[in-house]
Each structure stands twice: as structure tokens, then as C-alpha cells.
Image (cartoon, rainbow, N blue to C red):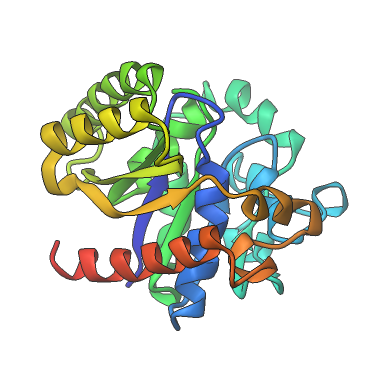
Length: 256
């Protein structure tokens, strides 16, 4: 049965989608059965997986509002080697439509339960806000992976996210926990980033993943070609780091 992980951070531009698609591809490269769920109306994980969001017949939107079964929306990322539940701009309307649903926080969890036995990992790319969509992701997940840059404002946002996760754990999903903090877009030449990295380790200890994702232009280029960075340029520093991160994730869940 799949372990379900949200990739979440309330701060935008911290590499959530880059982490989601490269972790999915990295795990698939290591022989894992992976499903990636795009829960962001921007649909960047969908496009970065080589799927044209403008040509979708069905998406996660239809699943959330009860018009389609999740199996009907599943497609394959041929470039990444994993399955995908895609998203497009229609998902933005789900926020309003879900308000009147009785079980609005648990719709995604119930849907994923139908296909959970088919995978080793299910990854959910959440939008950069504490919205009803993000809440669905947190209620469906066993844990949260938090990608973050080692900058001052990132620390400010992290405390808000930790409080949110604690509230969801207490009220809606007792299985939810922080799996780890992933340092991304890291530039070892910058003193501030080194200092913030040390603060994270001091405060969160082994919750901080050992793998560090460096700032890497090849990772940034890859989505324009519709493929994860670990496929676009396997020899790049960023690709190698995400493969290492996939291996660390497999090792970490074995100890949970």
C-alpha cells in the first residue's frame, strides 16, 4: 500500500513543483511505482511531466466535485516514468464549489483510497497557500515534505506551516507528520544560506534531509521540454541530488 506524501509550503517560489516531479521521477528510476497528483490550479506539475493541460479531457477537478472516478483521470508521464492525476485552470473553481460539501476536507483521501494499493508512493503537489485544496492534500497524506530555501523569510513562513500541520494533525488527520525539510536552490557560497541551514539542523535535527538540492540551471530548463530534470540531464548536479533524495526517502520511510 502506498505511502502518501504532500509536498507543501505556504510560501511560493520555493521549488515545490520542481521537487514533486523530480522526486517522482527519481523514485520511478529506483524501481518504485509512483503516482503524482497535481493539486495546483496552475498545473505546472502536469506540464513539467510532459502532459498538455489544455488538452485534458478529465482532471483532478472532476474527481473533487464528484463527476468522475479517480481512475478515469489517470494518465502516464512517459518522460518521467510515473502515473499522473493532472490539473488545469478549472481546479481554481473547486475552492468555491467544495464549500457546500459535507466532507470537503476528505474528498481526495477517499478518492486515493481506491487506487492506493497500486503504488508504492503517492506524491501530492500542493498550491502555495493554505486553501481547501491544500487541506485536502494534508488530510490525505501520511506526511509532509517541506522544500525550502535557506533564507530569512523562509524561516518565517516555516513556523506558520508547522502550526498548520499541528492543527490538521489534532483535528483532521492523526497520521499526519512532518517527514522532513528539504533544502533547495542551495548556494554553498552564500554565508546567509549556510547560517540558515545550520539553524534548521539545530532546531529540527534529523527532520532535515541530508540531501541538499543545489541551485542548478538544468533543473530550471527541464519543464520547458516537458520532462523532469533527472531525465532531461541525468549528469547535472541537480539531477544527481534528486536521485539521492529519492534513495533517502525510501530509506527514511522504512524507519518510520
